[in-house]
Length: 107
Image 1 (cartoon, rainbow, N blue to C red):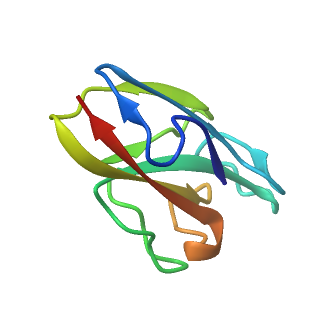
Image 2 (cartoon, one colour):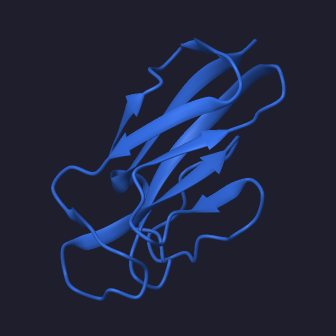
């Protein structure tokens, strides 16, 4: 998992354009149970989840179950962590091994 943009430590403005990538697996929509596939979840000010834990859906845990690889966020000014967490077709975490966390500063 990786962030294409923004980069770790970047100073950004709203809306924050976030682009993400998945390395070593294929992006597939939620519901897909094929081995080697998953989809992105973006945890705002959250931490990677344990393998097998169901990733919650709320305003701080965004699901990209259609296979999307980018989004625009509006965040309050200040420092925030953004964590990409790869999940399987049932939104279960693949664990910290398939996550990536960066910090951004919103103007």
